[in-house]
Picture 1 (cartoon, one colour):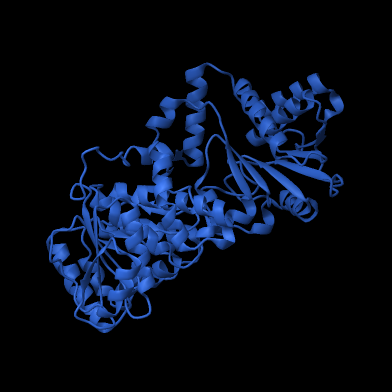
Picture 2 (picture 1 turned 90 degrees about the horizontal axis):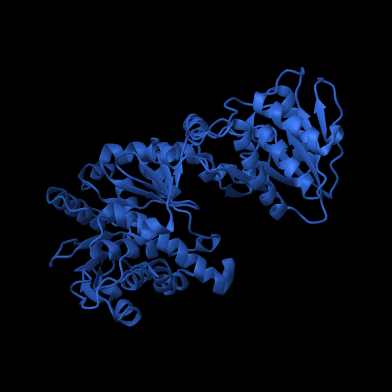
Length: 509
């Protein structure tokens, strides 16, 4: 699913009208019908509805939805803001006339004066916010700010149409949250917006859902885009069923440079994940201290012993592996950093993409010059803290995303920026948001599980960009399956590993 800017959405909207021959009113009526159905689903049954509509397209959607609700027996109290009496767009004016013709003159309270009394919003009221949607590209003026604050302070439940009024979806910086509707549910018209995937906006959006709209398929296919949401079919295309004659050699081999004294659990999780991901042969290179832990915990993996007793002092490839992952539980000892630097130089000379996670990234932040030796198309998997240590502290999620896009382009690497909506950033500046996942994944070791999956998928022959799409999707889905069993509080990283097979099976089948 592509994500477009407001300007691009407007172009798609206009193209759709031309291609279909629909009038603007007919299009808005169709959207209103879909919105009405979703509003009913999102309502608390015993609540009354108070709907606020603005003078532009979002207000037209709200009026159309109100008409549909009225015709189905609901009685929404509708307040339309038309300050000065001449602010309504043509389609909003048409929806107002249709509403009054079908539901009565008193079905809409049109506000034309600056001085007016806001309706009482008691605890048994659901507010429908249709004041402004994505058409608004500047902050709300003072009068509307007062309305928004009144709604936020008094409403117990708010459903926003398109986007919460006051949220500027293409400029997600420098917004004052008290001047934006704080919705419990957001019904996005047609497609999500990039602002939906930023952590700071969660309290404004609540739970969001896309309301299907018949935009032109041709317009959507040909429109330029920068952001996209991964879908199951995207992953199904790259996760092929096993060949009936496949051997462990055909299934690829990977080596994980992982583990140190006190952190062997990370190596165990990464190795178990790589095996669950379908890799034929998994080798773990760890210091001597990890021998018994690995042999007892992951007997299906091979153990390659480092000369060091408590940390890795040597990173070398003694065999031909299809993928190499470095980082889980690695530690940041000087000997380890030296070994990593030497290996990066060699891998860069050989143009071998690597997977760099966890302490491999922390080693890079300690010795930043090593960034110059990261091979092209390597995959970096930082969480927020690791990213900021590497590339500088960022003031917001969006600023961090923009910085990640910049780094991926400069370094020609893939960055998997982990979070609720993990962002996969390609070197060409394209960004894919992963929709799978659960708060249950907020526990130690789940990042090591993701690293193991990446190593497994690359070992099986996926190019780095495909592995970078598939692994977070499967990882998030495995977390969801684990949460179904253990709840969001009770999931451990081992539980996620145990659900990887089921997650892959559900996608392939």
